[in-house]
Image: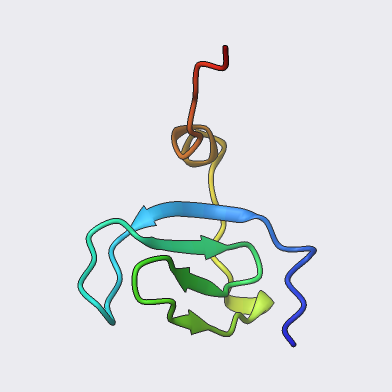
Length: 67
């Protein structure tokens, strides 16, 4: 089983190269990816993991009205 507890979301709602979804791929700080449309998972490599800027992190947040 993969251990991704220490990784954080870097980028969400990205296009998936495997299934063609325009917004289902998420990229994590350790470099692994997961597509919520086709369930494709790729292994990460911390040395080549993408780095998010603070603006990208804030842009990817989802805000909801909780009643």
